[in-house]
Length: 109
Image (tube, rainbow, N blue to C red; front, side, top):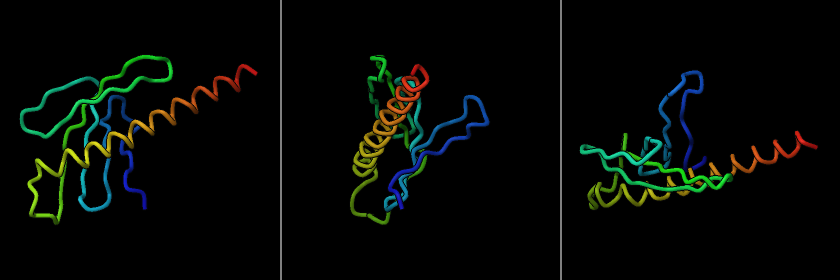
């Protein structure tokens, strides 16, 4: 089983995008384009330079978090898992950009 999966509904324009961590701790992070502030959720801001050299700004916010580790507070645990979720999502975007670039190259030849 993969640690992370991407969840979205491609049949709905503007549908929410979620990154789900499937192992303990169970976590669902919502990915938002742009830097957005939330008062009632643990969130963090990230940046990614895509294959066209354009800076993309992202915010991950905690939608759901469950753990059996009751020693550490969620405020300590969530940022660690969120950072891993971001690295996974950034790798996914890099992979997607690379495949799109290769498809464009193949179409031109």
